[in-house]
Length: 253
Image (cartoon, rainbow, N blue to C red; front, side, top):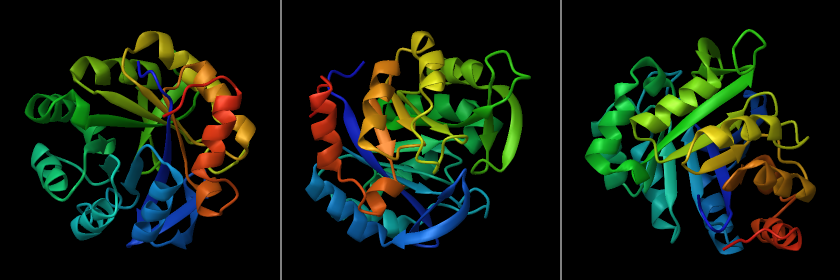
């Protein structure tokens, strides 16, 4: 468990531009990823997450040049995901400036990918991203999806989280599809469900819309909070979120 809570802006990238939608749909242009990464670094972001949201759907690799240019502007860790299928893909992204690699769809189709990444580069490099939505037909009440939320699996979210950590994931990025883009708050029920069962840091993602939304995610068990649209729109800054967390008794960096 991390001692200080991290605040992480997320750059969802499509065709070289940062985009944002609601429930993973209806993506709208939000700006240039390099410019936004620079802005968030200046605001005090602890990390940046760069997700190529259509790489898997389009069956292509992450845009390496854009990753490199984004990394060059930063003095904080950069997590990159989207279109990662092999440990060689990970090696290329690390060579272009990424610090951690997020895998989702490819790991679900071939879980050994998590083992491969952790064994070759260390667990600290391997982030497993779970795009989760409610499903009363599963044991935990949550199911994982692939391909940017477009394809629903029959895999229980809690079971997959536990398996991912057992295979070597050093962190879980937990995206709530139900909350994504709604600005109604993080899915604290989902975080609370996972927390007792996994020992690695949890990053809460999806639903941030107000300063009051961040602390409850930490109370529920998240080690970091990730947000996109509230930062891209200028509605909130990273420093404002950190100030609010401190006011609520949360330790930040």
